[in-house]
Image (tube, rainbow, N blue to C red; front, side, top):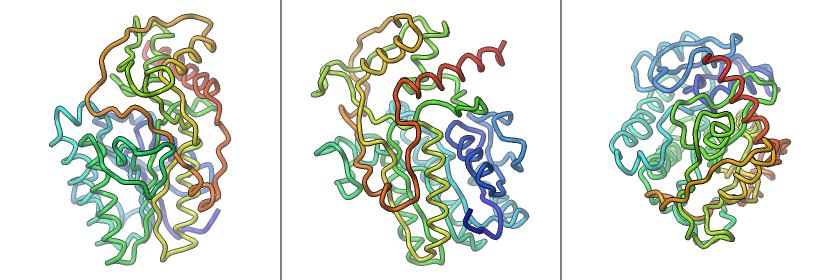
Amino acid sequence: MTALNGKVMVTGGAGYIGSHAVLALLDAGYQVVVIDNLVTGFDWAVDGRAAFVRIAVEDPGVRDVIRQHDVKAIMHFAGSVVVPESVSDPLKYYRNNTAATRTLIESAVAEGVPHFIFSSTAATYGTPERVPISENDPKVPINPYGMSKLMTEFMLRDVSAAHPMNHCCLRYFNVAGADPEGRSGQSTIGATHLIKIAVEAATGKRDSVGVFGTDFETRDGTGVRDYVHVSDLAEAHVAALKLLIDQPGESHVLNCGYGRGFSVLEVLDAVDRVTNRTIERKLQGRRPGDPGELVADNSAILKTIDWTPKRDDLEGIVRDALTWERKLAERQG
């Protein structure tokens, strides 16, 4: 582990991706403080080795948390993530993702935090001109979710130029799966992620799975996405933090995906194989703000940080998600 003379503050650390990042940091030997307002997160999802403060990222009290816990790096996951909702309620997304993050960055600058890692998204690209998508391709978001994240990338770029802070923005593609050791997983009620929905159907929580759009210009007409295991993604954050510590004057924007895509129908077929049952599929129209195909060119991240994906297997991702879903069902009684 590269030395960090202080703690890592993880915002949204009681949520899906944030809780996995907390695990990866703790497993790597870092000290962690989690802040989360628990609007969508769960306090039981925070590993007991981490300190926990229930507070919103835009609260002025965050500065006190940074001071009290000697925070030297921030991993920022807190925010709203549902693309269709961002289309119907854009102001919520500009408040939760852009305005709140601006206040968080201001707190970080005021307290002299030198490193900032941001949970960005492939939605910053909009409908790509080509696939796979590289970091330098045009950023033309087609929904407020993507735009709210892109605006934060711009803020971090400008802040890092003006202050002694470096940053790494990781543009996620489709995050799925759960901690292989069963310590965390996606627990959000009403989640919109395909694999989460599919394993809910496989465990009887849903009667069917909606397939939104069958007329995309893809191999079977359904949307194609690059699915990355959440634990691989979490380890990418730890590797990115190491890079920021080792190269304090350098900032980065990197795609985080596997570089290959699966269609909605291919994912559902994989769930059928893993569960040995057939999930009912309901074919529906496209959702607002959904591009047809998003697949990462991941060559930059593989060259830039010390990260090698270990779980690039669709059926393995499904199995981990299914195991967590069954565990969650037991927890909920």
